[in-house]
Image 1 (cartoon, rainbow, N blue to C red):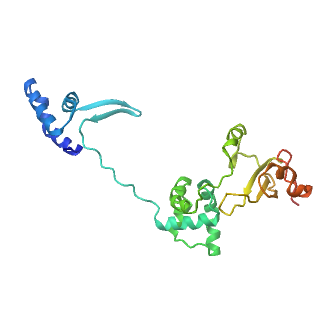
Image 2 (image 1 turned 180 degrees about the vertical axis):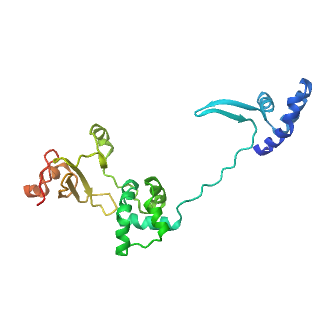
Image 3 (image 1 turned 60 degrees about the horizontal axis):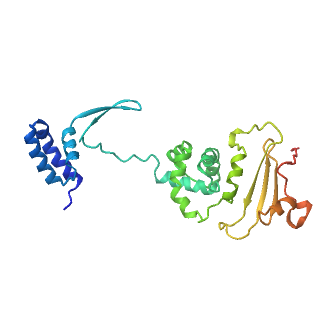
Length: 256
């Protein structure tokens, strides 16, 4: 026979006051009765519960003293109210696809800049309340609202082509993110390989070596049959005209 925790708490609540006020002989009798009803296996543990039940204890907490009451009813946790309804979520999903499925940190600034453009072009129609919430959305909230939609379009292998063997090398290379570049200085480039896998990254498929100069925004693109090193050094077919840019010596061109 099993006794639920709620039933045990009810039995102890009816008995702890008599136990704390009784003499030694009466305590033994009450303890025997409660132990038989609750089916606790440890007599010492049950005696500790009966002694401490209903008494307050103070402990040091991270923000000051904390008061604990043994046996106090648990506070009822109410479900958090959702600030963003289905209207915001559907509009966000539409914007996510229009922005080529960006991550939340890139998507939120893009929404603030492009939402009026999409509305003028007729790509999206939203109410004023939905528009206001979309423009104040945080990156973490955007990622949370898009979690289920991402699962629908995510492939089994992911979209990154970086292999574990390159992780140690990546840790040795200092990386800079969005606003850490000084865009007034010429000669700084960002380079990456973009895979054209059509959503399935198994087998062989073409890549594009993309190198962008950050000051003037000049971008060089070179097609590669695969990501093999030989294509990055020589270009397809060994043609020097199709040679990919060596990352250590980027070419700079100025806009006229």
